[in-house]
Length: 399
Ligand code: ATP
Ligand code: MG
Image (cartoon, rainbow, N blue to C red; front, side, top):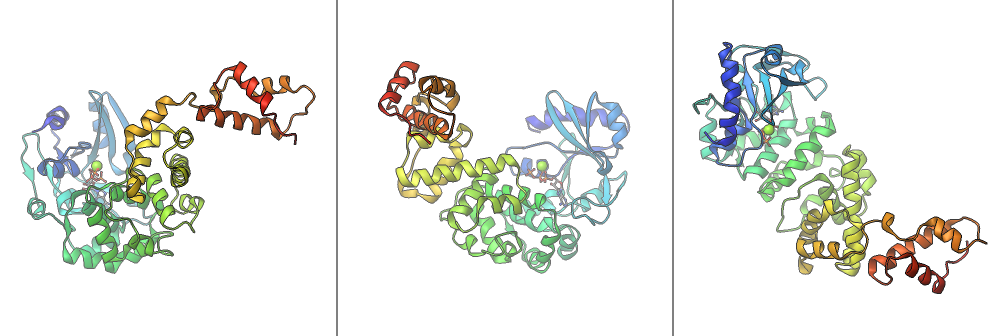
């Protein structure tokens, strides 16, 4: 066993001590066998959620009705889910009701792909009821059971297949592909947030090109908001393609490829958070500025440092002839005399005092903006004295 499992082993032991079964399950077992780094260790157990609550000090009931709680243990979080069978997905988010069971077999059977339907006990013994290990060996994504039924049951699995092909660089089994094509219309009934979540992971995948090929081959993109109206966006993606780390970056790229679709529209139709929206807005502005002036002080100043890496990634994709390096952006950042408007040595009240005869008006904001620009560019030092001097020579227009 590797580190994250050794740490989590104590949880399995404690559950087993109380005469319940418990296993590592899903993505962590898959990634362990692939020798990939492990994101989070998920646990499946025969113990009901209320038992888990009793056994551990810190338990967060995140999805108790579906049998999932988070156990906090030694500064780590573990999703612990009771073995279950899923009912139907009427709301296309969660199964209407789930039934808790005490054997793992049926729990593994409800899982999407054979490579995700693996479990491992505390000693590293693998439970593999659907030849998941063989599919890992052959780098194949294949549904557990009949693909048509499994995709109809939860069409999100269609997008998940693409997401895993992008993350793992695996092929998708031919029959699974044909079932994806048959059921793809059902994607329209899904809650968009679920799609956005998987689509973000698709674009983050190390083998994004592989994922995009399957996206085109299955024509699943023609079922997605906006992209169904502009399907050529997918054909016009830059090549070579490199992974993007957030949906804000993805929107910025799509907007570059198809400027006819506004950021507003992307954000609305894909139900993005405000955080993603702000990211997309800033990235698009920074890219526009970069296209006009190259890497500049003002461009870097306007962009939050949170997005420097994404900006560099996008420049590399969109503008490979004008490559920039993160170091360059950070150097400019460090050389900036101020980081925000708040740091300006002169404020609105100072301006009013300087021009006592003038009425308050838009000239105030305009002047502050102008000062901000001149300070950032280094044309004037950010001291009250020098800013006042500068204003004397460049008096604001009245309006
Ligand atoms: P990652 O490493 O990206 O988190 P993961 O395999 O852990 O990949 P999750 O979305 O975290 O993916 O889901 C955890 C597990 O739950 C999966 O491995 C799979 O067994 C099961 N699962 C998740 N979503 C579905 C679904 N829509 N249908 C069936 N099984 C699912
Ligand atoms: Mg996971």
